[in-house]
Image (cartoon, rainbow, N blue to C red; front, side, top):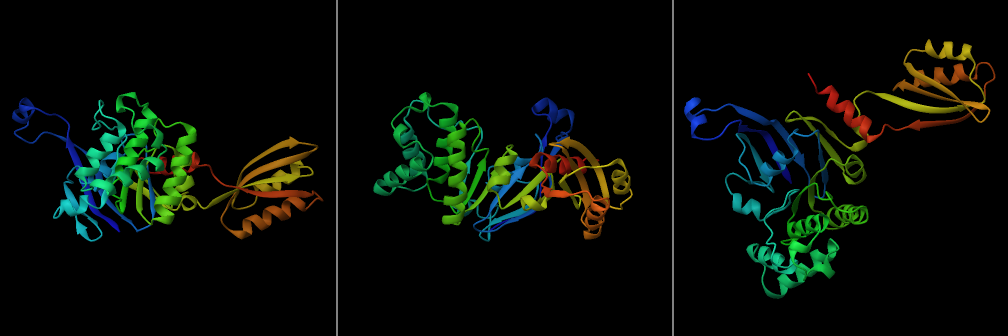
Length: 329
């Protein structure tokens, strides 16, 4: 299990000796994370979302021991990463969105051999693991090509392969499908969900700007805004207001019926359009059953036939926008 407790992180806004002298050794700082509290269970896939600059990558780097928080505590399987960073690192695999550590003149196989040896893998075990992770990301046939010849998408997939070399129980993925073509991106998402999480029961935290990706594979989603967690929960439980939208197909929709609908408490956002000799009514109703019952009664009061009633789920973009805007002061 991964536990983040009251983590805050800030960075200096200016650097260099002149700045240190100007501010007497205390230059102004920008707060990137503010009192973050988060728990991720074993075998859970958590998505990190947020507008640019919200703190997603910073939070990943803090959890992966790449940067030290100003305050707070992070533990992996009960190991405090500040007190025992090496033991924590042994349980972590990291895929970054801007990878610069591969050697361009070496082949993909030689790069993985190098990083695998740093993780303690040797001989047959290392060769077997390289074949396995390269097959996982769809690069088995390209292992003996130089890294310099790889496209951006292939480099990103090799970064995912490197993160999985040591078979870590906790995997951090920062935009793993960035620059990856649609076919391989879909395959990669499927493998992350089914293979890593469902089959191998790994704890996976994925930062992404692709909302459909997060909604499609994540168990829970944490939306960051301004360095804080604005909301966290299952994708279907993220919307703020207890309002349900319905699409209702009617034989007709007369003006007097609309007047009745507008007088119903909890019914709003009425929109009507003609279609195929009838009418389609779109409306928002609060979470009470009474409001929906009154709506149906008003619609059928003058003999109007109700052909279809369908609940319209909010799109990921609508939910994301509502959560982010709600967090703006």
